[in-house]
Length: 365
Image: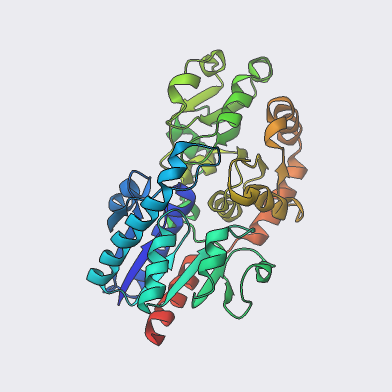
């Protein structure tokens, strides 16, 4: 069986894609798997590191601001379609998988033209325009939230949850061991702050701008992933020098970071939410406003409405985040309630279920 997995751009697309590939390999060890991503994006580094071959397309998304770059987009799309056709023609997949991101559109479009069956994995609670269009010819649509029949044909929808890297749930260590491994105090209450694989300026500014609060609350320590893009700026701020703050550019081992934390402050990407549910960590979500269809707010509200997370708006984070964090860190009962409700939403078998659906689709071709 030959499988093409397309998409990427951020860790929220790349890591679920790798989890799906790993699950396919567990079920069909002889499966040939090829990734197709966007040149210059995260997948071009992370996929080979996970042991898979990847080919890149010359594709980028529409800029949200008026810019000359948008004038070149039609040419890039035509180039990407031509490149995708060449890849598909040479590899001859039995099935293709789209996980979202720039490369999914051209690759799946070509597969539709060539009569190759494909499936879509929609990670968010609010479907993007590209996936809604691609779903018309998709054999199956794997989703992580209820109510997705407002976007997709109900007969194609399979509720699986989002695939999460196996090591996230498999951290075989104590909280104290995890904290020691990261290099923070093993006994202090710990807040993990991160903004996804690239970092988040709002979260960084919320931490950097509340030096007095963090200095006054030495019983709470922070593991603060600022992101590689922001490390030079924020690692030199006064708050970064405080003894209860550990600044990191990137956290490769998220399993250990989650284990070390009592509370998490983060964006509301689909992968992040799935990981939080799997480890049951109480969280304050700060949805990014800079995403298509404001899908992170929809993701966050899906948890808030279940009593499984708290939320602070992006434009209120600098003024409201620390006050809410302080209350949550002191309220063990609330932490436990959030944790219990999150764990009830977890779907640890998501990757295996999606892999089975992909293999079935290939077999029916």
